Amino acid sequence: MINEPSLAEQLKSNLREATGSISLTEVRNCISNPRIRDFYVRDFDASGLPLAGVSALSEISMLADDLQKTYAISLSDWRVRERTLELVDDFHFQDPSVSIVQVWYCDPREIHLHELTWLLALTASFTDCELRRCERTCGAINEALEPHGFALEDSWF
Image (cartoon, rainbow, N blue to C red):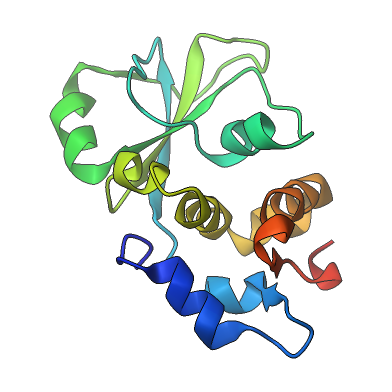
């Protein structure tokens, strides 16, 4: 699980290849995706929540974000707040009042404190389909993780 203590160190010691890099494909096969489900919410109060998905990658790379910001929230926090939220199914792509809220099985605020583990959590939170559909996302993941010795293989993009 992504919130396991010393996860990044374990991955580095167990998955390092002869080239010195670590395959993010292997990492993604070893850790669970923290993302349970996405919701579209109008006028969401994201105070104290970290950006997630493309929004988070846009903050640390050259990837450009959409108008709808993406945030991560724990399942327990979501359950407390969900009855007071306005969920939407349809919205205009230029509507900045809508946020994408990713519900995670763990508290993303705790992971956010640890840079490498947070970057690995972000990588794991993308589905295979999302990565195959957008090579720019793959490039942003590599841009963020290559300095730490991790890389997505070219087959992803």
